[in-house]
Length: 117
Image 1: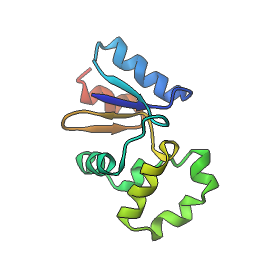
Image 2: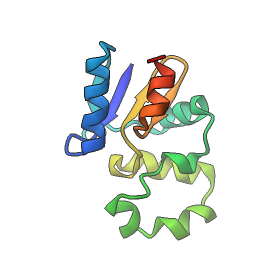
Image 3: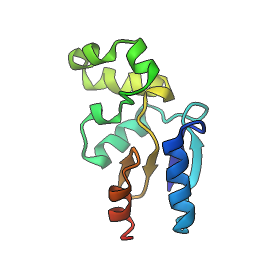
């Protein structure tokens, strides 16, 4: 599994701690230095079954600076994914990618359900 994190993010650190405490193997990637590309994001979004909008870090400074709340509804799916691929800080994190699932954000309940804990 791949876990995209931002090292300074406390929620990301909580996700890392959860995986380590439960002996779940993963490869950690810094979402700023090694962000997912367009094709990967397209695949992750499809695999998640969620709307593209759920992949945006709506509480991030970059999201607010760019005024994306008002711009995203007017954008095509392609434009949204291109925007996400352009800057890792726009992507909701942590984001855990498995063979048949994607968890974005760290809601303990969702993670426990996924790993039957």
